[in-house]
Length: 181
Image 1: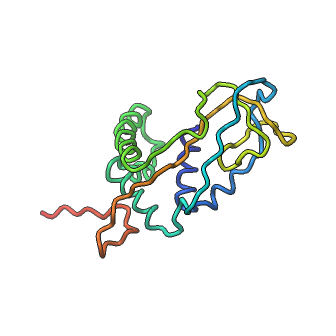
Image 2: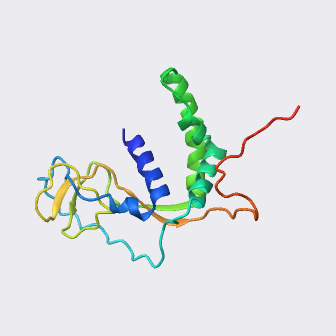
Image 3: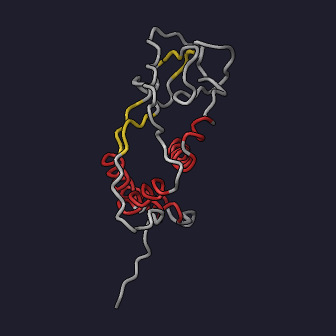
């Protein structure tokens, strides 16, 4: 389930940019928020001197193109898979994963928002950045909040998309392929 949530947020942020991040407001806290911890507070995010996301569709289409070229991601997501057996889907996903992971490692520098291991007890201080930490469960009060880390989050430190050729339509994520006989 976490994979589908991650993919959903990925495309939401990719297409809506910083506006999507503003939607990530604290609504709930981890189920065992009563746990105690002596862990240090999460590190504050460095200030942004320039917008992280573009407002045009070209970078999003370019990234989708890379994911399509290396992992056939668009084809997979557009395919209706309910008629396939789990083993058939699993075999396809292995190749898609390999190609998309290559794109991720080649074009992005990422770091975890929180360095703690999943399942560890963490303390979220009052005044935390809600775009960096999403509280889940029964959230009451101002914090600090204590709970179990369900996912460490990801912070994009650098994006290195290739240059689009002059005159090329950057919105084309994948060109049609015609085999001439």
